[in-house]
Length: 281
Image (cartoon, rainbow, N blue to C red):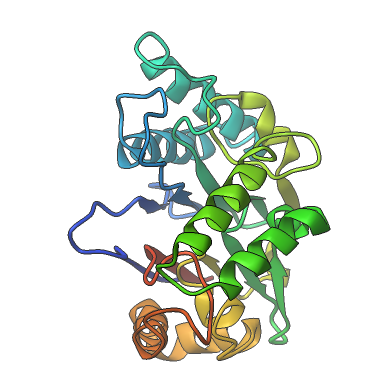
């Protein structure tokens, strides 16, 4: 088995809001991984005294422990328990009903000699490679499927000059439209304080013999495909195998540096936290 994990903050002056971990049981059979991409909070108060890294470390640690110790419990139920446990850790001090209470995207995978299970929630990605080289991307596409009126606001914002008052005003309007659909019916979902969101995740299983390798990627790492169009998912997995997770993130950073203002490749941040986990089974 080959394991490769790299995580790099978008800004070295700010804490990395991603969380990544891999666990292998003492028996040597199977394993599990967890990748969370913490959602950067707004600048105004959001009802919680805790940081996003505080949240992702607790949620990620709980999910890794539960997925490994409760092998007969589905990953969705493990996530629900992890969300509840994390919410209980700050329910007495924080307003967990706030729409921007600390939250994160989720990718978790568990495997043994017989099967591989996976769960994806929000816009982090999972790649699964079959023995014949076929690569399937497991994605939760709801954030990309917001109503046309919301997508039009985003396009209009990106068309305005960076730094202009008009762009700031349009961006605020677009932000409010997106926030109205966060963890709401007809919108998109993240792991925050409501355990029921776990049932809305994309889940599935594969026979263990049908999987040769897999990769979990935060959206800071998938920019190589989804923003810069420098390669496809198959090429991403080939790059991870040949050159490693750091090489993928280095290519993302080079692409970001070549377009620092996002004129050619619009994006919300110049650099984002980027995490890649590669597992060769």
